[in-house]
Image (cartoon, rainbow, N blue to C red):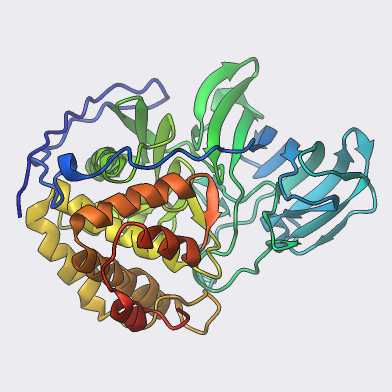
Length: 481
């Protein structure tokens, strides 16, 4: 198969944040995508008009030492449901934790609302007047959060939300209006593994102020930072989930990829691994921008996690400390593979979203296979290692179109949805050919961007790019198609 060579120039810049360091660029291999970029159609689809998005403004006061958050939140909600609404339903994940989330005030269009109901992660707010289609309503909330301790020992799964001795993480920390589909609000229940929240696309302005600015920690967020009086304003356009992490122990490295700044936040003993994760994400942004579509944000933050897991949010991902411990300087490393994976979620989660509880294969299978696409381009000599050690070592099996609730444990769920899902993508690509496969991915990204897609959308778009019969592959990997 023909290969062309593409050289990445990673320009490393100094970060102006406290305790920052400038990374020394690691050697980058000559890139050799299996599919020559010149042969990938790039402008064969008509852009789809994007409707007005929801807007979240969160004025956030943080007492880092007391693990306390006070928030004034405003949501501007355009009703694109096509029907009149008499209430709004918000997802409130912090309310799962006892003595954590306290509502002080709710207003709709300036009028106080007291007859709301808050049950576990569901907040139902009756509207004083019905909200007509294509009309806008403003919801204001005041609430406090007492962060839980991130107990990694006595928890069934990795604890991400809360605080540890050296880190504070705000993830899924603010109420957001649930997506509306088929006449109802999409609110899912959490499970022992996998993700369950379904996010709308939204714009964010998050203003952050610490109780004691003199001892404020280093902060990583999903947004682009700029001064705003006593606050720092962080903005994110067209994202799904705004996350914050803070630590007085963070050091920071940065590099520039086009108009995007990539930040790596790590603890001091992990500088080499922190820089490697950063440069991997920088490479992955370039590879995926060419093969799928442009990276959508001004920043990407990589945050070492004081827990045994990696997890994606908009323009930010947590990277398990265990991978930093194991890093040996080689691309044949889980630090590198998973960094590419979490970067891929900026396409297959942040932009093209799906119901992660009901159809997790849509983001996880494609994102896992995106690791292979990264290795083909950046480290082709390590691609065989990736298949052998990252995927096939676990003997993946099973029909991949399962919900998170279907009885698997965390390991078997990953073997099926992630790893066997990667084999589905590989087999599909082999059947329809590289040109059709990458044209499909670009079209899928274009049509799915800023939307919540389904498996039906995946195959509908696929069928416009190939006449090949792949029904036997579908029969092998799916039970409901």
